[in-house]
Each structure stands twice: as C-alpha cells, then as structure tokens.
Amino acid sequence: MGDLITVSVGKTDTARSTDGFRGFLVVAREANDLNGDNIGSFQSNSDETAKTLKCKTPASAMTHTNLDLKDNVSFSWSPGETFVGDIVFVGTIVRNFTEYYAGVKSSTIKIT
Image 1 (cartoon, helix red, strand yellow):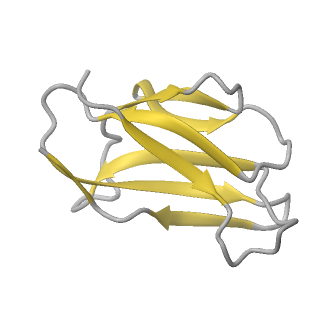
Image 2: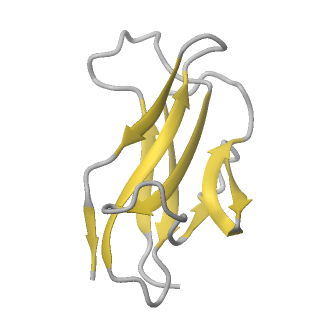
Image 3: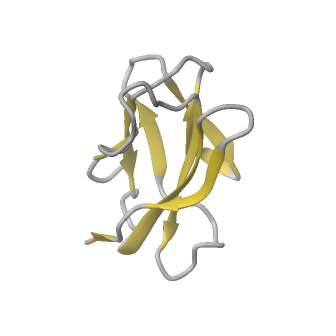
C-alpha cells in the first residue's frame, strides 16, 4: 500500500477560538494535473469523524461523518505501491450552510 501520510484538516491559528468547521471533502491529485483523477487511498483514524468515499476507485476521497463543529480532523493517505511524483491535497471546507471554501490546496508533497 505504500507509506502512510497523516493529513489534517483544521482551523487556522488566526481563526477566532469559537470558529471551526462542520464538513470537508479531501482528495489527492498530481500537482501538475489538479483536474485529473484522484491518486492513492485514504484511511480513517478511528475517531469516527471521517470516512472514505469511492470516487472511481475505493477510498479515493475523505469526508466528514457528521455536521458537528470540528477544530481538527486527521486521517491517513497512501500513494499506493507504484506512484512516484508530486501530489497536492485539494479540498472543500464547510464552516456552515452559507460559508464554504472550495479548492483549498496543500503544499506540494514529493512521493519517491
């Protein structure tokens, strides 16, 4: 399955202490093809706040399990046995029913 990388979705240090988020959807994409297919697979870290989704391939996306207010959610991702290249995690973060942030990107991560 390849090495596991811990992925965290959380509020920023500059957010007010009461700010959090209620939902999220995260995928991994090749850094040079952000509109391409999802790369690798996700795995929940048993805290019951995140679950995998099948988007073409099993466990290729991660999302929330409930609408409770969250400060931080962590889960694992694996590039698989054969992938080599640069990836970016791309997500949508939902604060409430009228405020959300689409196309949020991580820094580029090199998979060797």
